[in-house]
Image (cartoon, rainbow, N blue to C red; front, top):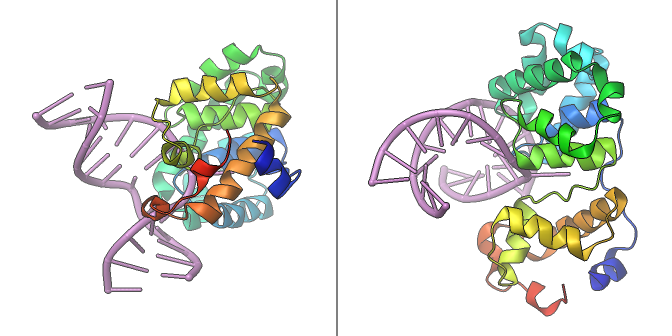
Length: 199
DNA sequence: TGCCAGGGATTAG
DNA sequence: CTAATCCATGGC
């Protein structure tokens, strides 16, 4: 981890208001971040980059805005479901007052929100110490010979790092940056050098 | 041109 | 519990 810090220094990977994180977390599912940014920019232009914006907008409006991210019909439903849940619970202010475990359950109860999406919202949107296990993290760990399941992997990172959302976000950012250099695709891992780094 | 991207739900074995 | 399939556009 220290070697990654020396290599990349302090990076803040994703800083945005909680409502934008909720939306971005859905849009980024199986999708490149550049395309997500386009969709978010469009949503902002039409005043729909918020919980009430998504809840009140016509489906076709959301579909048109998120089209560049792919899976646009599925994602529109997921955005409606997630923002509806948040609105029902009293908005992001009410969520901010909830304990982390409860908040996680409420997100996971939404159709289309799995562990990764829930944890990324917790960490990046609400500053909670939830380490996100994504495709890059799995890929690097696999190259290192660590083949445990997601739940164990998550505990591994959460124990190794200071229990703090900023520390988790930073470490995850380093992992992603390194993965983009070293293991560009799933198949490009043959000559991967990650095993030379100390965890 | 074909492959792949910061998932998740569903179905089949 | 693992594996395959669908959702779909955009970039190289």
